Length: 100
Image (cartoon, rainbow, N blue to C red):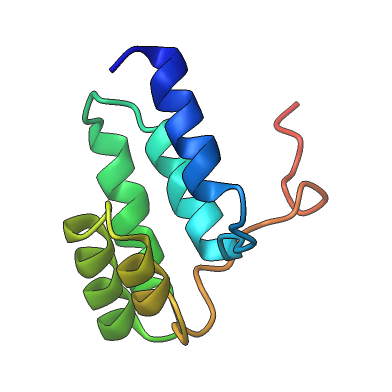
């Protein structure tokens, strides 16, 4: 099927659709589009920090495992992302001291 026919197919089938993805679904799609294919060790350090510094480390760890396992299933990612409590606390730019 050429691009024009494929485009027309979706236009015909989705012309009456009025659903919008939820915020979590948009974030999951954005994450997939921006995903860097190379694995970086620093990434896992941030994941670990996010787990252990969260309000509920066990629940956060399980959610991360589920979200990374089912990363293509936006409904599953949204489901496991609910009710996780406070995430790791960060510093505002005002709190970071100038090293000079």
